[in-house]
Image (cartoon, rainbow, N blue to C red):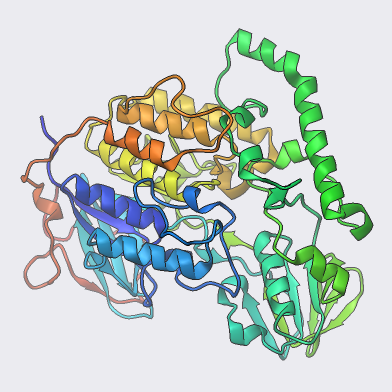
Amino acid sequence: MAPHRKRVAVIGGGISGLAAARSSRAHGHEVVVFERSADGIGGVWQKTYPDVKTQSPKELYAFSDEPFPAGTAEWPSGDDVRAYLEAYAAKHDLVGATRLNTEVKALRRDGDAWLVTSGPTSGGAAVNELFDAVAICTGLHSKPRMPTVCGEFAGAVLHSSEVTEASLTGKNIVVVGGSKSGTDIAVAASRRTPHAVTWVRRRDVWRVPYHILGVNFKRLLYPRAQEILIPSPWRQSGLGRVVRWLIAPIVWLHFKMLETIITLQCGLARRGLIPTTNVADVVACDLPMVTDGFYEALDAGSVVAAKGEIARFEPEAVVLTGGERVACDTVVFATGWHQTADSFFAEADRSAIVGPDGLYRLHRHVVSPDVTGLGFVGANQSFATTLTSELSAEWLVRYLDGQLSRQPTEDEMRRSIEDQAAWRRERPAAKAYGGRCIAPFHFRHVDELLEDLGAKLTPFNTSWLLPPDAAAISKHLESAPAYAVTDEKKDPASAVTDEKSDPLVRAVSTDENPAAPRKPLGRTV
């Protein structure tokens, strides 16, 4: 029996939201994209700090059938990515389906449907609407994480997402955070001010140069062969465990050599930046790239490194935990993001999605066996975010339509989720982002999604010595069985926008708690 045409709510208009909207529409569903920014689609790429560029090469940061325009740098700039996403949305007619300046306040189940409460991001009356399915596409960078610091500061205090050209030019700046955004902003600021920029980090981390001994890092860290060197969250046979035990010394030597090369190439010893961790333990999602010009800025004194945290503010300075007082007029916190992808839900659904250990319990990083009619796209961190979001979006729409070639049972999903969670509990780095990091197992993740879709794969569908191939993934996607939906649509999730024309939609005061239990709104599913 052909699946019926659904009304799908896509929450988020960034990379993953565009992927989900396109896949849903391609299969005949009606789509509404909720984007809280008033400026346009693009998610975190709609507004970026100066000089930002991707950490992944362009062929891994593009949709499989839509490469970046000719002439784009290998690591695209923020402007390149924004223009690319805007062109993609226009080409696939997704702009008209997007409601800008619209924030989803709450989601709750209403029979077989989902009641979505949304309203203007800037404040105002909210509206309730019913949808057959929901795709959560808010990613991992949604709500800025800002530390609480005592004292009063007369200058500007910004999160990295708020940094602009004007906020750096001519300022006396302290940047807090050892992440890639922290070093990016420190270097960008040093190019725009005569003052030395103070860069504060709690600990030193391994940073990967874009080229290691002259070789593009993607050829060293992204090939399929690299994945066999890391203990994986998938169950292994007895033979597999024996093989891993036998190659353990080789694996240890491999990563120690990598540490040595990075240490020597980047001069970590003389700069006092050698991490205390092992590369093998953080090769998941705690391995940022080296910002262009970072070490040169340290050597020139235009960026000054300090260790610790901000202990307190003074009107015109910050005092670090080591007692050092740093005069400044601007403080930038490059301290990451709260993981809020579950914040829309009632407690019962939230508890099903996020375990007591803080790890997300999602099969294939997409769906929960306990929350029906809903899934996540782009809720995982990877080195190939756009490609994995595209595959996850296609997987989700087929899963909701019951059209996966390997439609999982609840027991299969629970077993897979527990295997992944058990592995992540043993590896601190793998628990980052709520355990939603798929690195370094990109090939394994992509293979599983394609096999579930019914794509035609061969044992050697890609080289063991090359990074993921977007063109090959596009061909595999095309080989998945086609299907069509019927025009018949469930009654409750019909498109309604006027309270007078349908009792399923009504205005809600912003003072009202949208997540609180409500009385039925006229009809039931």
